[in-house]
Amino acid sequence: MDFEQLQAQCMNCTRCGLHEGRTNVVFGMGNPGAPVMFVGEGPGQHEDEQGLPFVGRSGKLLDLYLDVVDLDREKVYIANIVKCRPPENRDPLPEESDTCLYWLRQQYKLIQPKILVCLGRVAAQRLIDPKFSVTRQHGEFILKGGTWFMGTFHPAALLRNGGQKPTALADFLALRTKIEEVCPELYRGR
Ligand code: URA
Ligand code: SF4
Image (cartoon, rainbow, N blue to C red; front, top):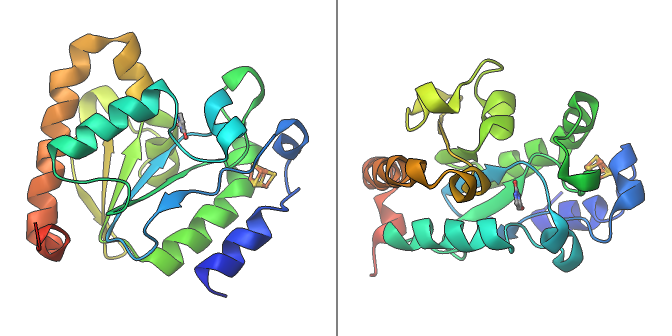
């Protein structure tokens, strides 16, 4: 199965209860050939309406951080733990995340990223460590199965608590250093 076929299948998914309230499946966006992948939690209202990840206020902030380290949405791939919006933006239930993880795993297998950045606790606890603490472990790179995993603050958390913005910026600068180390081709041609 190629990436487009995978996306087409996911667009019709009714594997978990979240399909009932959705306007659009938010499969992901960016370059499926990218060596760097970002994973958030799940679509909010704007993402649900537009069918694209991180297009609301959080997304604007994410774009700013990407820009600081000379990245943009065409250079990376952006997805979420769950592809359909949880009602009232609640956290996805464990069974919803478990079910939807099927799709993220297929995306991961096809993209084969060198680096995967978890945006926020929900993604980091699912993909790095069930006990992951963003406050204590943000910015640390952990090698798993040939991919460097790192967790940092969710942009929505930074919008609530601006005091963490410099710390998040430092994590993105560490990301740039890691890119230079493991996939410098991403920056060539600039
Ligand atoms: N928050 C997320 O976790 N993902 C999005 O796509 C948008 C906001
Ligand atoms: Fe399917 Fe994921 Fe949407 Fe649930 S959240 S219906 S598993 S795409």
